[in-house]
Length: 602
Image (cartoon, rainbow, N blue to C red; front, side):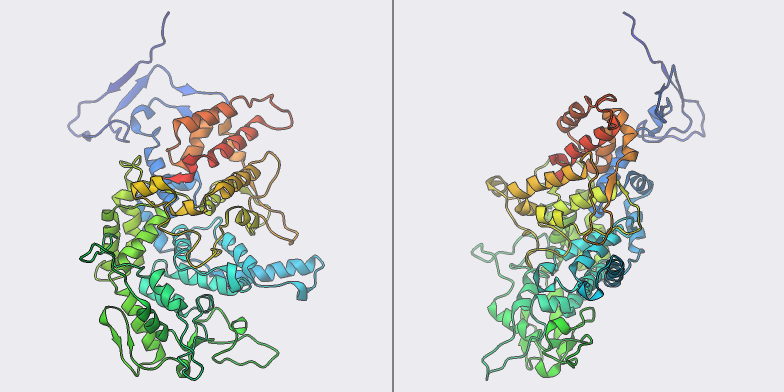
């Protein structure tokens, strides 16, 4: 039996001026190389041709594309393949610098605009204007999705969400009725995402939504006659959750130990009481127009306060006298209330714990659950001092995303590598990375079914500790390996199955909305599979295309074969009511999106 032979001739012309390379063929270095082959592959109904030149010029290699896909999975909510290709043409640092220069529209203003549009639509459909409530959390939710579909400020939005899970407020509280306030608080996170962490700490301290959530709005000084003392809630959480944590840390995130080998607490109850004195006297900066004649003053109930203006200081309600803070700092008597707050913010911001504390939290959000001490130390160092500046968020973001531990795949099979992707991030990926059937300009999404299924939505954590604890240990195997898995705290027998059901609905052969609205006479948004159907003519080509988007070249052979085995029997005569390529795409997507390969980012 004769076997076909492919004759490949590599002809290197002898020329003293030709460019010399010491690396390998396929890396794009084909200057001066001529390739001749007996044939080149082309197929009917395919636009692509397997050119013989591609054997040495690197065109057919996807390494850089997959590397870029993985980078963007850490730095964004997801991008389509054309965007991945464009980013792959330059350095990742160049992309980050470009993102730093992009501004974003105001969430507070957009929430108001969304409400106005929704109200007009409600009235146009026969509703009574007085019966339409808001702006409240639904309108913020619409604004959030409107801002995160087809936008360009991808990195800023990703960092803002990460910060929202560290500096937590939640609509699942008495804040849910205040959509403008939610939007404005998110603006504080978004606008400070590339700024300085010290400014961010102060801005969230003065924001009325945080003041209401953690009860330092209308927090009065000590009153011996009534036996009352300042509320301690915010004083505790700004230390434990927003800046320094519970125990003293080294720069690499390890615990500082005393002579007995025990952890050293960063603060005690007396420290909480002293900080609580600092955060007194803050109240409304303005109140809404009202029929009761209520004017702006300390003590006005929060529902009348304007919630997109920082709280004002009312000196007569601020605790006077000396306050003794951390590391021996004495705040002198006689300062103004705002001077006291600045002293407290500086005291926390300059604490040695803040660098590693924020480094760990942001690395866990973006890259991996168990960063090495060396990785934490490098990011902490960037926080502590970059060109003489402490708390520079741009430097911190670059240190996280460009670090060797984030970019290299050498240790990708190590158990410390990777993280479980939170359900809502997986949801955002699908909505952003695939086309949407969009008949109108709005991308409003209530996402309430998804919230009920998984418990996740922006600014909807169940408590101030976020959706999950950063040091959550899922089981004994994690404990033995001294690993944490934060997102596993919300990954259980109910939410895991409900996520699968959500994916089933997105990819069901009939029409179903991945973006949905409520009672506004608006169609939802379904996924548009048209572009992917082209690749579905060949199951392996389709799987490779999806791998580039969703699993960054890390789709296991086992999962790949399972998907191929499932979609290969779907052929052109499978059902005359459906195009077989459409069904192949939906089945392949469904199986990939519920696979562990997609759920874990490495």
